[in-house]
Image 1 (cartoon, rainbow, N blue to C red):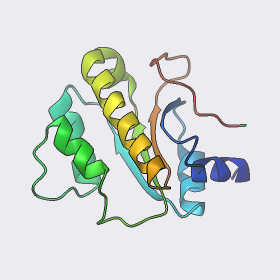
Image 2: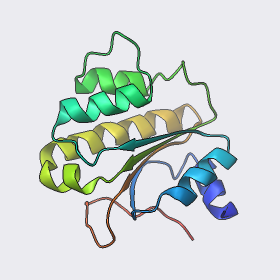
Image 3: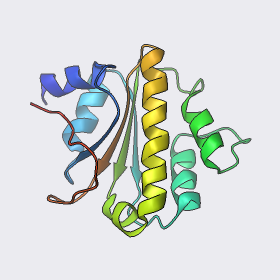
Image 4: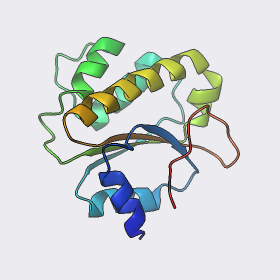
Length: 147
């Protein structure tokens, strides 16, 4: 496992929404070694906002009051008091179907996740949303900055 990847994931200034290739194993290992909360969510069959938010809500055990809209989604990700941790890594695996096939909802999801990462940066914690997809897929996201 790469110490540089572990150090990167601890860096709140660099945290945000990124794209990576299909193999997320090293990212997951680095997140765990860094002591960060880690969730792996397979979004390969997601078709819309409801499907996306429901999968993430289930994986992160959102509170019962979660209503499934983008505002509530952002509120829950900006709280996470039920998951105290020095930082957060959300691996959104198999993202091409949602990202390429449902572009507008994917773009909105990225905007919300980017806002959440910015919020957590202000709280002194890294929040990473890392979308995985096949090699060569251009999701319109920056590549994960690994050495």
